[in-house]
Length: 420
Ligand code: HAM
Image (cartoon, rainbow, N blue to C red; front, side):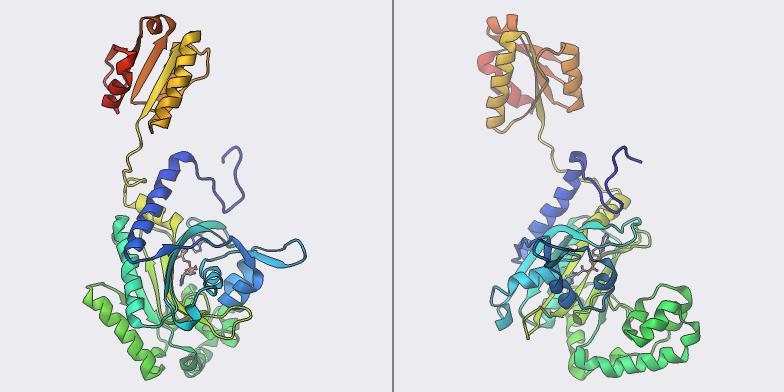
């Protein structure tokens, strides 16, 4: 247990870990940029009704997991549990409702009051994308392909893509009735929660994880076969395009996803390197309703859990920061009054030239200063004493090789660059 732990389900990210996060972020920016996506930054909290209406009142996230509180003035606000609803709220300021396409991605923290477990956090981070404004199977397929490109660029292999269709609203009553009839026959073997779901939202039974329910779910009627011809065709068109690209997928009729806004295509990426929380990313096509708007915003997108991406990269033994080159550091050690002034000025000058510099506080012994140089993993050290400075020289030590030499101050910059 850390001496000063953050709240359960939240984490501190220390400087040594940030390289790994940056690698994810840089990779996202570069891959999504190639598909013409621009970064959108929305507030971390929104009016509660954005999520209630956007994700659906019935969803588990809205019912049980939101961090909701009263803002000054009595307005109910909620820390965003996901990125799609807020992004759609923001994009209402563009022409998306008139069918003008917007391509945005976002990176940042999300908040869900879930029971913390490995890979399940209360503050977690998502990188997400939304292709908004238009409806076409090629956009669904392109979005899935982009997600796979992202994972490939992260070096993640061995992931499984699961795919399903949720049809559209008008497809659902008949399919839901068939499911209800089937589950009613087996009600005695269903878990307590699923019995409730049978009355409320029968679809939710499909992703129940209880073993006895799973046995029954395995034999559900082919509800997607009951969807309208145009919905079935839409899904075929998505699959056809994935086939064109040679993308492997599993059609999983039990994949319904927890948020109510989905229509047509839904998908999830799982990885065996994670435990029970094995979804690294999920998404799909949606119709999202927002307060005060009669028309839904349409789009397709996904979000990947960044903590889970890092866990998978670790399980695959990939270098955490993707071998980003850390800039090499110069340590400047000073012995004496004049040397202190020299150190302070040289550090400033080198940093302004873009060099990473570390120093110790005035008055420390040379030994203590060199210990600091080791701690920051400096590539070389400039050791300046008052006597040397009077002669117009300083000592330059190569900390990797161990050699050192006296260097004229006029050549110091040049000699330092050779060691970086
Ligand atoms: P989601 O499936 O709820 O979808 O979350 C996406 C990903 O966020 C999950 O696959 C998982 O990796 C990560 N995640 C979710 N909850 C947690 C948690 N408590 N701790 C750690 N990681 C978590 C959405 O959020 C949709 N907005 C995705 C989307 C975008 N659909 C269309 N556009």
